[in-house]
Image 1 (cartoon, one colour):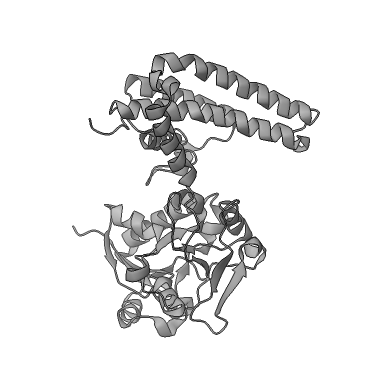
Image 2 (cartoon, helix red, strand yellow):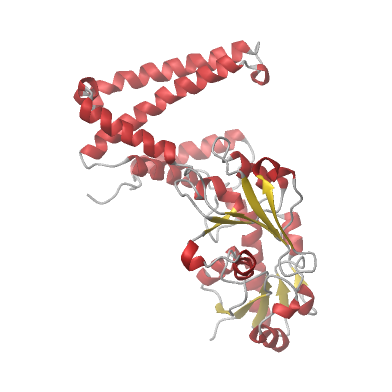
Length: 371
């Protein structure tokens, strides 16, 4: 028996006039139609469609939203045999639900090409992406995804003051002077303007807002790169650093950790028991002691890299994987029921963490490169 079929079309970046002929034809040929959201200028072209906006109102997180949308679409396809699913922009650009549907073995999937907001952006900015080689970054993950990169960046999903604030804070010390804000491209009230970086989180924003950052003065991960270079120089030129081993350094890890704990207590004391009133001097002392702890990690990673065991990048990647793996209530695996991983209290999280930790001791995960 053939599987149920879902045909995905894109509504383009603006009004119905930018829909492709193939999309218009697919809409007309499908009886059962679904819209990821009706909050799009071309949504009116998909007549008699069922909107999935209610999922956004009920689900606690975006991951839950995407999972529930996929389940509803698969169920509808199973009931009707075939359905049409219309998404904003292009189905191939920043569309998580389509990525999940591609992996779903319960249905067959047809994805029709469409004009993306990215295409309209390059036209408005006069940018050739082959020449400028920009990166397209989700605003929700900006600080993580642009680390170590100079840009330029097209930042999408800039729909709230909270997202804009997180982007702004990612450049607390090395912020570019200005940023270009692109809003509602292709619509009568289209806006393209340059604003000062300090005003970024003060401007109005919605789901049709994106940012263009031509190039950063320094990459976000430059501090880590500089530290690794300094560490290599110390190993080559400093007699004391050159003599150290994992064994000889181990006591310093305990010492530095203890001094950091003392700095935390000093921080609390400086605010008379209230961290909101901690003094600047105590905060600076905390940062200084934390740097000493980081130095221990850096030193041991350098020693391991010299032996060909692993690098600092391997350590950080392994940590990232562990944090995701041990927080399934936050990062639920694709296709898993959110209820299966829910943890409502800190105690439930702690118990789950310990259970997973015991399981990993019996079957340790591998995150180091092949040697």
